[in-house]
Length: 163
Image (cartoon, rainbow, N blue to C red):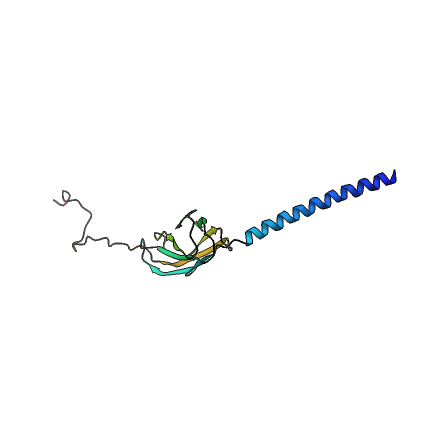
């Protein structure tokens, strides 16, 4: 009876050990596949400073990048850190090794004050998540004078009321 129980425990232990080794190998193979991605995204610059922009001025900048890897690069997503920052990018389009493209980032310049915003890019590159940054200052809106541009003071009365 003891021999049967011992044999049964040994048999079950062997099955569990082999199953665990198979799972470890599958996980290792998965990690090798991820790290073996030969696409790579390289930006000319990862941060752009607009300096001072006038209210409702041009808040668009094109970040140039190149696939410096050995396989096609595919950008799957790019998201701004808020609704005021909108990226435009070549979504799910294979970018060949050595080929360059741009990600256009537009900031809503109808918001006065300092800003620092990011865009997070997801791709099949070795570094699967990349962050680019824009910053600057938007001047307040210009308030027009309460007087007409012809130089005459407007007393608020209509022409009929002045008679």
